[in-house]
Length: 102
Image (cartoon, rainbow, N blue to C red; front, top):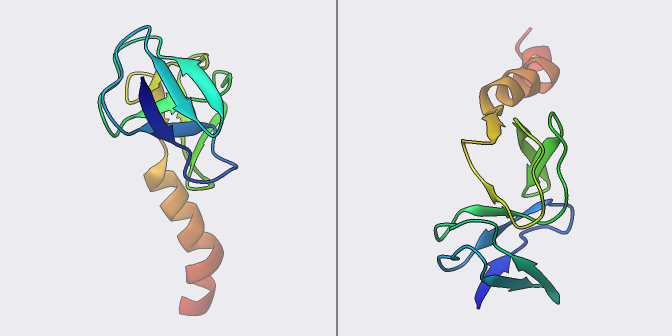
């Protein structure tokens, strides 16, 4: 058995606290998921279905977009997550910081 940590209740992913093997039960918050593949320690596991193009949320913040449909128990990483950090930083700057800099 492996445990995972959902950092914020709004997150649709959790972090596995030890390596999870494919088929292994991953437990968190009274929930049990089956790891769809091997998931390295510290990586994300999907808690619910995430449709292609939907935001992946960690720390209550969007951290990426799903490149494909992601099912509960799947490893969420660069193979199925489009990193949108730069875009979000630019949007944040344009929305909040640029106003004060003018």
